[in-house]
Structure formats: structure tokens, C-alpha cells
Image 1 (cartoon, helix red, strand yellow):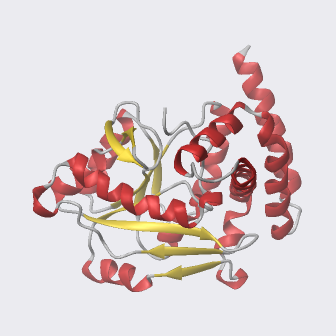
Image 2 (image 1 turned 180 degrees about the horizontal axis):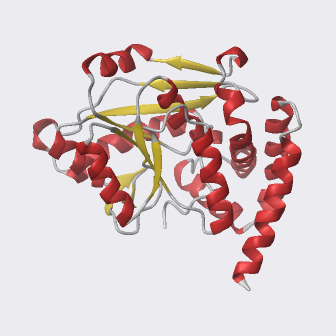
Length: 289
């Protein structure tokens, strides 16, 4: 029965995506955003989003909370549907992406350094991997697989088609990705991952004054292999124009701090990003459970 439901979901998504391919890219983003903004509040994830937002912005009244969560649904809808127009967003002639901190990337390329890029589920995070690949930095990208296997394969195919080279690739989080990460490091590749979601097998680290299960494995890899950590921030400026900011590298291991203390410093960085653009973060994830 579950497989039938998965197939029905996939067919619906496929039909929608075929239709959206025929629409101008601004309308694609707007329609995707409005669709999620309408449907999202009827889902269980809506209550999760409101609870999460209240934990962080407890001084705001309920109307402000609802307003921000509504905008968050809009951003999520745009991000989801924009995966079918990734190539169009990435084209220089469309002028949809402004790179800030390109000098930091140029230094990495000049020195041929291996690094670990980290970001969060904010604005359109799907742009990060193809942007790095386009700029000549080949990475292994870790992603969380979608439960529906048909949609998972479909989305992975769209992601892969947005890449310029075969040197960059995606790997699902799990035992297999751990092996691929080690192989990639040995071959000189860099890593990119999004670090803001719950990791049931992770360590408890403070985030917005809550101890939450957090992945710290990438810090162990960075420390062991002496890899720089590069924060990458994505900001949606309007309908589908973005700033991608490559910040200077951070060193959370000053004074020989352990992974938990180091992760606290990383969390302080992403807390600032979330506070700066709260309506662009993925509040619908059960982060504080």
C-alpha cells in the first residue's frame, strides 16, 4: 500500500514539474511559494514550525510568529519548485546569483586546498553545490534522502543535471556516505554539508539555549585531516535572486577545544544567520525535539 501511495505522490509531483517547466522562472518561484503558503498550514509540520519559532523568538506575539512562518512556507515552496529551474538560476546571463566573498574561494583554488564548506537550510540551499562546482571547486555533497524512493531518485537526478562536472557528486547520509567521504578526502576533494538538522546519533550541543542532537562528525574529519571550515550563507533577496556568501574560514578548535565546544561556536554562527533572516529558515523540521 505504501508503495502505491509513493507512486501516486511521484506522479503528481512529476505532472506539476512538467507544467512548471513551461512557465517563466519568476512565475515558477511565485506559484511554488504561494502553493506551499496555502497548503502548509494544514500539515502537521505547521505546528512544529510554530513551536520551533516560539522557542527562539519567544518575545514576539502570535501574529508576528504566524507571519514569519507563513513566509517560511513561501520560501520552502519556492526552494522546492526551483529545483526544476536550477540551471536557469545558475546561468550568468540571468543574473540571479551574486557571489560575495569570491576572494575566499580564489585563495582555496590558488592553494589547491581541501576544505569543508558548511551551510544551513535557508533561502535556496540547493544552489550551493552547483555554484561551487561551476566555480571550479569539486565537492562531495551529503544530503538526507527523501522517504519516497521515486521522488528521491527524481530529485537526485535533477540535482546531478545541474552540475558542470562529474567530479562533484551527491551522496546520501549514512554508512555509504561515510565511506565515500573518506575516499573523497583521499582523492583531494572538498566536502559540503548542511549542519542544522537533527542527528539522532549525534551529540547534544547548545542551539538557541536548547541542547539538541547535532552532527559533529565533520568536525572530527576537519581536525584529523587539518581541513579549514568555510561557512557558506545563502540569502534570498527577492523572488529568485540570491546572495551566496563565502565567509572567511573559522577555527573552532582554538585552545584545543573538543568537538562539542567547537560545535557551539559553529552554532553561534548559524544562529546569527537565522536571526538575520528568520523567515527563510526551515522551521518545519523537528529540530528541538
